[in-house]
Image (cartoon, rainbow, N blue to C red):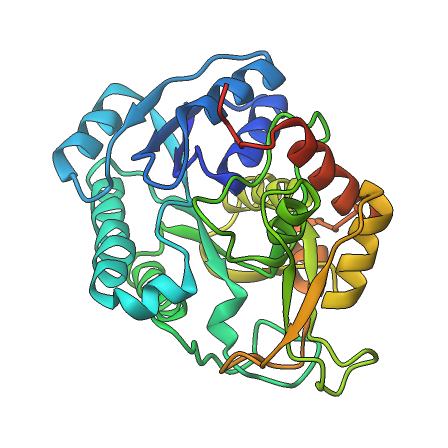
Length: 337
């Protein structure tokens, strides 16, 4: 029996593949490589010392996906696949709704056809919108503020309806906060197409000389240094959360939602200072206007995952920055060989 990893060549997907292989699971990866590279999966094989099948396909292709299920005994699915850039989703909402929602619908229909009813879904803290009650618990009111976040919120509701209708389904919905860092080997890390949308890869590209300076969006928030505070979680801790969630859905039924975060926040200026310490580089930055929709502080209440999954984030800010810098310094152009 194998675990199907949809979107397994991406940033979080590759790290989860390594964790699963090292935990003794067999995996099958499907990815269309729109936002990822086949080379990343070669590095997964090297790090884990284990081979696995990879299929280049789009989840919107029902026949191609069905063929994979017919060739392999799939026990469960971890679903990372989808588009994820907030700004792009505002400019191209129809593309995001079709890609993210329709592909998940086809995946679930295919799972049902082959009687595979265990699923771990990659969601996001963006579903919480602008809540200002901290820390954010899973029970907080949802209110995604952009098409990307709304696709995640709609998929969550769809999956909860599926589990409510058929008691054989077991679904874990994982709401990520801010994944950062890289594999400790320095061989896998975040490799965004174009200019990074997220803070730490942007900082690291400034450190390595690919970008000129970091834009800090607002320094007049009610925080200790005026800049926004977020919960950053090491990608390897996040990957381990998927392994724990997978083990959990093998023993329970129904749908459950879990925050994956550290439970504490760091400001933008703290992140810049920590990366300067880890890299030995000076990171120039410029204060810019606030972005619409940004809130002052956001960090997770991860106690549910702690208690029910036996999962805890173990890596601190220093390790996050050191690992991100090791990856960036060793791979200044990403996954190019």
